[in-house]
Length: 408
Image 1 (cartoon, rainbow, N blue to C red):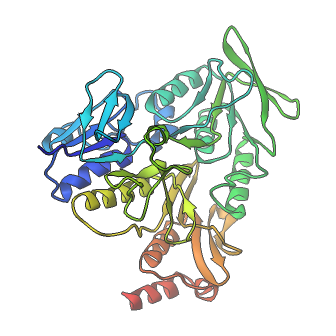
Image 2: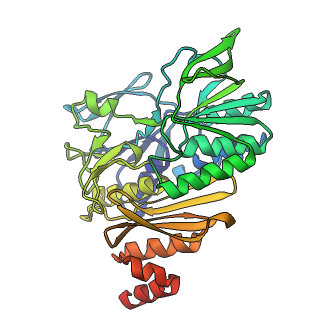
Image 3: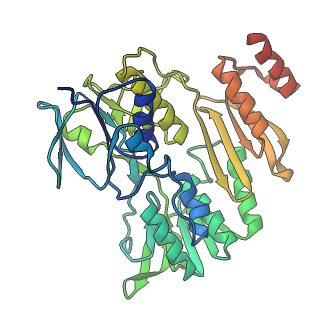
């Protein structure tokens, strides 16, 4: 009897894997296991529209009837305790074991914990799931002062949302600039200036030494410089940790994520990993990466499903990302790893420009602020294997469109 494919994780990667298996004609059992008691939903809106609108509900990844109509056995509210490799089965805290022929780890990541005094006070919140967003929405209504720890995408998206709602917001970032891990300096500097213009205070090169509270609720953050910042709500956005524990306990190789090959297979051929939890050698840079994006999760899920259904392709998707921070739509394509020079096109003062990043003369990444045409053209060129040099970029989008047309 066919045991089929089990998928641990009902986020973007897990749901796409299940959907793509059926689209590929896979007719064996598919079981989608989620730890939340929710229908799978989009996570990007949680830091923006969801927390600012008391009436907003989750934006579902698929309609409620999708799972039954596609013979996908969706099982919410389950906690997997162990992968039994010898018996090829999963064990659960409060359910009978399930056997599998193929297993997909779409376990994602979790917020990195803050390890300072007061981190366990009420009002200190990280955002990863919808319950976190509900708590932030509730707490922000009664909070005049908000401190955001971390100047990455999540922290800045929430900071912009709460500032627009009238809160007094301070962002504290340990590095010397905002978004230092994800974009280059021109973008980070621009974002900082836009926040300053809005009245958001930005403290870089600084951390929090402790959090103070009264009656179990946070009241202030004390910076590493000794300044006391009033805070009735503290958002912790200091990075994430991949959820590799199940794989590690089973003896599956991990290294900043579950190690997979170009077909999303782990070192155990029947077990795949996709999305935030997957670590792999990227075809574009030749370096090991673990990418945290909806696009990466979705494309890897599609490929894993194709392989399970009998395909033989390897992962060649061009990475792209986005973030909506206040009035700035940031869009990124490619990876700026190894870039040693850049070219800025557009008008920073008009909040509309792109930074083209080169390794020598070869384009490796484009980071755009409110320039969607630059982003989309970049995606099309890189997908076609075209990486124009600095001179062609200087000639403008029409010249690059001409190059794309000739290649097509």
